[in-house]
View 1 (spheres, rainbow, N blue to C red):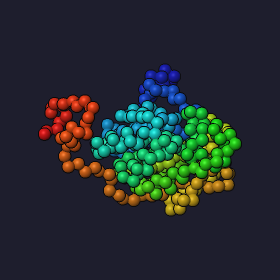
View 2 (view 1 turned 60 degrees about the horizontal axis):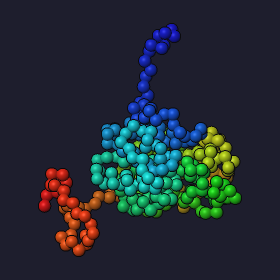
View 3 (view 1 turned 180 degrees about the horizontal axis):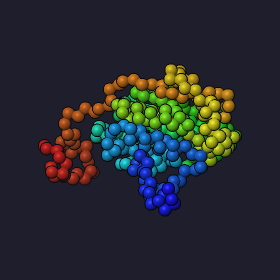
View 4 (view 1 turned 90 degrees about the horizontal axis):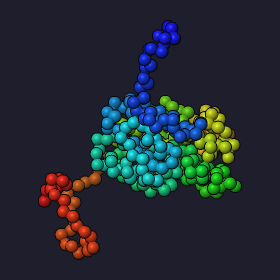
Length: 306
């Protein structure tokens, strides 16, 4: 084929091209960051789910991982810090036909958003949670977070972290998640399959994804760049679907400690469905409404018939 013919030949589109917002590229992620791989897996899972794209919704919070909602070309919400799950809960409960996925970071979901996480799991709300764990608050300067290993150095713990970290799969199982998994960004096929299962499964699903943060965590802890951290995943990861979740804590700095990954929990529970017997109306008495300006909404606007 001549050069002229080669240029004239239209380039074949990639299957997930329509799912990514090219107008937002190039991205802001650091070299070696694993968040792009997670978005790649999520995009492929949506395509393979067989569910119409208009019925997929992506919700995220604040942080590097929270940028995911802005890069996928579907209905999405980039919410306030720690509030991704309550935003997503509102969408999922209001319209159960939608498949709502939350993609956010370990700090956003398990620190300021920790209470939302445990109560959504307790209720078994129909949400698919993808928690990207890079062991620190990457976007705001590499501070220690709820998953930072004991002794690890960060910008706020220059002499080592003294707080015991969350074991997120153990926490998710304990509070009632229907599906719990942990994979790394090296396990592309397993991660895509786990996200696909989470999309299809009814109830609260939680997938922890271990991802490099060369800038905020790798550099100060001698883990290395993104490829070097991926090499540690290759050497240290052990698939054990039957693992005792209380014993799967992580410390990437220990080159001899296995990192346990797998699909740990997959049970059937009735998803959360609020029972509503009729329209909720304010009390007839004005006693509880002192000082509140009351506005009358026409029937045709609110759809409530009295």
